[in-house]
Length: 180
Image (cartoon, rainbow, N blue to C red; front, side, top):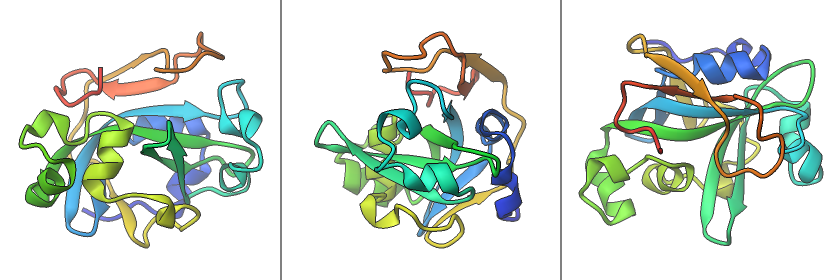
């Protein structure tokens, strides 16, 4: 299974968010199938609008890692997308596949469903933090092509108070690893 080329991320952010479902996140020996994402562009909930200085990488690149820190305790992993404008895809949940012992140690849990279901848990399990922000996908953080065809579903994004009507959350409805 080959790694995704940077051109994959040059497309419209919503397409990238949808097409990432079923691909495989790879970070230094840890791997997992992406089962949930959310798209952010220039909508009112996006960092490109709410935090323009912090989110420069999502406004001017595609195929890069955008990591931010929230609630004073969690990191969130995003991939920048769209060569025409601002865009980032939040990786909300992953189904762990390799490196489980390392993920369990980082998360301090043996319960596999709690390793990477949710953006904060995912970053902790995979050892992702601000040192990854602004780096090109394919350096430390990589994405392999789809392993299988997911049962794709969509809904409103989670945990936002603006642009709540947009159904830009995508997930594999057959996966027990989706965050909620």
